[in-house]
Length: 87
Image (cartoon, rainbow, N blue to C red; front, side, top):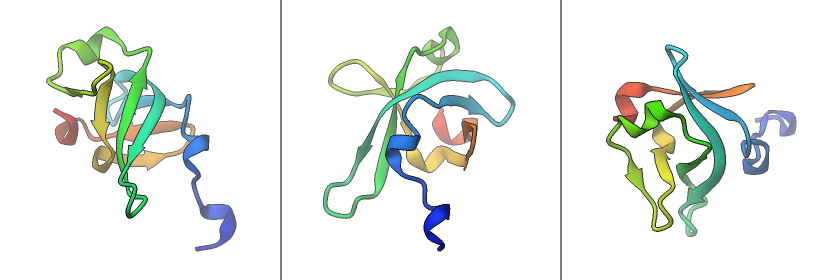
């Protein structure tokens, strides 16, 4: 992979998280990762929308909504997640 194609986690912070159908979840507040492998595990939401409250998402110890990173289908101007993989 060319160096320019890499996505660094710091570039994801603050991006808006939306579903494939355009429903807004909030913004990326932080990320969790597996320390041994560096694999990204979850997106922690900041400024969550009321839509997120209706979903059965996991929360971290601080009460932040967590979206499994495996649900991410695209990263660009927005972080696009598959709603089927989240709920």
